Image 1 (cartoon, rainbow, N blue to C red):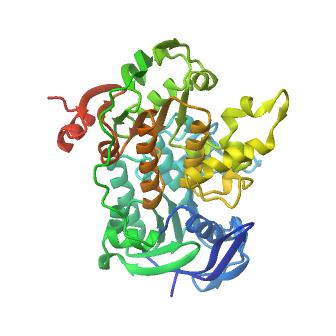
Image 2: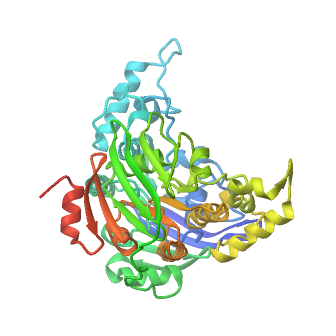
Length: 494
């Protein structure tokens, strides 16, 4: 009997068809990957199955039983669990409290049975191979361990179907291997897995079947062994993706745009000396936990107790907050796009957020000028929005990243700090972001490009710096061998 059977599901939002009659099925013990560009409808479909979004039409059966739509609780009772890309743990609670959230055991006196709670939580953590104390605060865990806590939490119920949204986007190669092992065990137990990822090689490795969505409709469902990465990419975007030849602009010889001396935030970021010139892209490559994000956040004034000096265009500046960084001409796009935009605000408001001063006369905002400016950048960056008034939170991930880029271009930024900007976006959006980065450099903007993907760093950067253990451990030209760079990132020096 088919485990999950989704038939002609439709969902429309104002100005956009999210799902236009999607069919989707998962067999017991099957890993079924769901692919598509950002905005193709993957997240909406998963939310409909999980009960957090009510469709306009369609039906869903789980183990042959009709699933009442629009109720997360009912979906859980039917054995449906989901782990979103943006984790939903409560930072102020312990690991054990998060694992059993909503299911805390009670004593006869109706108080929480803490010992039993932590015993049960430890059993669930052992199932995913996570060795941490259950009384540890979640906020102290690495992102990879939080991901495993989230999976353990999802497996607490009698799970028949587990949906994973970009589960390896913040994991190292070793941590991803551990996740694949868990998926293999679940498959052997007859659990169905819906696996959403933009990593095509990863999908071909882990999935049995693959369904591709485009513009809210099913393009095709294929067996993983019958297709190549290039076939999947073409199905996703409707055209053949280029092989990304080296299109870097000539090595920058412009004036110095940014210099740091002893920039540090101990113990996780050791003193860093950086220099960027106008029109130069400097790549910073490192594995998860290497200190890349800490460097980016420290530079943008997001980390307290930072030390060292920063110069922008030859002028020493004091950066103790994001406001200081913006005033100095810095822009920041982080790996967590949810922190980059204000979801409830419109696209126009998000784009002009750092430029309100020049759009206002006293306390009065020139709305017409705001819309004109936003429309210009919507066109220039090919942001897919129904209008400048569309809430930014309803855009796809790739378009949200472009909104943040537009914000900094609108503000006249001189230095852009990009921290894993392509995390969790599809191949078509990646191609567009790479084109934009090259164009921004050609326009004279200095770009610090931090990434955990070596291929990205080498494709975009004039120079590649390697981070490990919170420090820069190697400086290499972009044509240095992959083996040398990977060895340095892994802590091997020679």
